[in-house]
Length: 384
Image 1: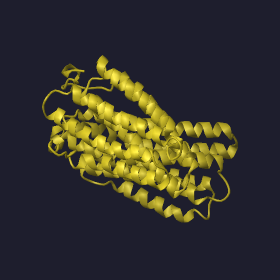
Image 2: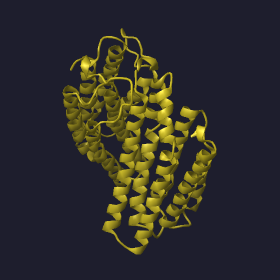
Image 3: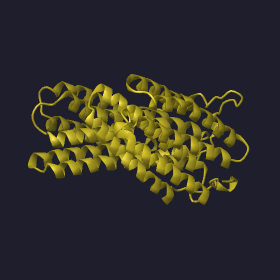
Image 4: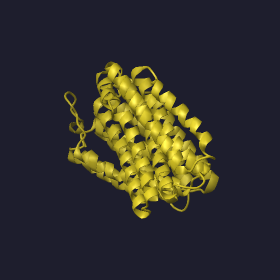
């Protein structure tokens, strides 16, 4: 790789077909995560799924940053992406038993993604701020990787603690500027990011998550068709539409314009996109689990795990979107705050109503937030 592999700045940088092809692996990864949570619907299972989701997101988002700097249509960059794609496929395949016999396979694949891709980035970057920044990123990837591999070699609680430490290092690194002895630290202005491109990449990952949710909904209904399951299908679909509309109604496009025009796009790329899109993705994954649970068992007693998934998924999504708006526009929308409060209040209905009724209430709430937010946007288009 050489400096000619850098993306050209200036003009509109669109997502390439190479990047879209790369994303196909992460459709599989998101599906694996939702199935894992469904199979281990407990607090410990949720914590394990969260650890793995963080790893999957980190592998993907760092690759999105990589293709923001380097042109994925260049043969050398494309070869790196194909290699990362293969490692990501192995990592995704290991997800269901990552806390069992496939722990080392998962850890090794994840570390390979992070270390090899970043090392190639360092080799390709011209001398200057970008190379120094990427060298710091590589140092932190090696540090985190040591914890991932150590966790893969252990079992039980030791693995969970070591992987939690690895995730902690991954999350901390951007906030401390990847500070490294002898190399200093990066500032967000060192990250010469194309904001509109990175925004589009994160939006597409949300589409992946929504697509997986719809896939789960359709597949579960196909396996258990009945009139009441059909009602649950409509409820699940309505909730997905409500959440999708809340984000993509105009804030997605408006956010892209804001980061593209920002004086320090690296700051928004870090906080609004790298970090605050993650709770939205998590919310969609949890909602997909809720959809499968409700379609499969629409009547009878509502189990606590089902209630938490039905109400917690959209509440998590709205929380992430509210924080995103806070960072981008400096305000938290009242529609989102009201929606989260309603979801919390609906928890009182859990002992009284069947899963389908609770899901219908959640769908109505999500739709209400979408309508409220759309009305506000139509009255204040500048606020998105």
